[in-house]
Length: 201
Image (spheres, rainbow, N blue to C red):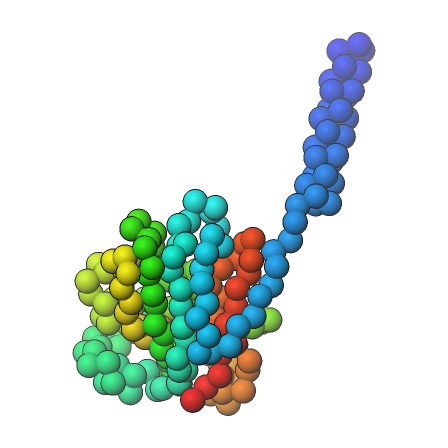
């Protein structure tokens, strides 16, 4: 009986400590500051990060220059990309590409990198990732990686090819929706959540 009472007491104590810690963290953890920018502005990454505080992008900055929607094949032709034939076993291919043209600048960072896996086009109910098939063909020097580095004190222009991720989403989001939905380019999550408002050309 005493052993059972001891086990129950220990369990209650563990749950109470866990609950107290959870409440403390929820009431004392600062939320991210949401910062919004416009296209054409030079937006510094600084020490903001997506998932881990050791991400090192300080010295990097981004300028969004233009955004345009193309049919998938038309975008491939514009980029001089030869697409593999679609087949029933091929990956899902979106109908349209949301092309975001940017300049990335690196002032003095010798080791940091830009992560395109987390750099999404978003709004309240849509998250568009980089199309990895296009990305690999556009930038073969990256070896299929979502990340890239620039030499210190250089800059480079990029096309970020965003697409609808699944056939289910594509059925529910028309071209007109894409043209009219306000979208944000999310470049960091914490301590500042930095987002650039995208306007189509």
